[in-house]
Length: 97
Image (tube, rainbow, N blue to C red):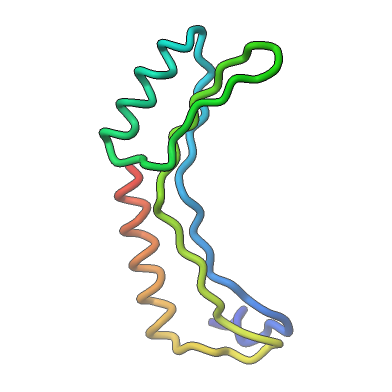
């Protein structure tokens, strides 16, 4: 809270989604991993094939959170709300696991 009160600009609380990149030898391997990721709930997962034939499978979570806390140095939310956001972000981190 002390750091927030000293801030002179905009402060945003941000939780980024989980991303795991896996280099696959064969397209079939990537497709198998993609199916497993989708079945596990990682709906933003996908496969990319580079120009050189490199096959990359990305396992991506949908769990993200971005909330402004202050604007031009003025705190816009309460300490209780920030604690609530931390609780939500920690729960999302557990879901990623």
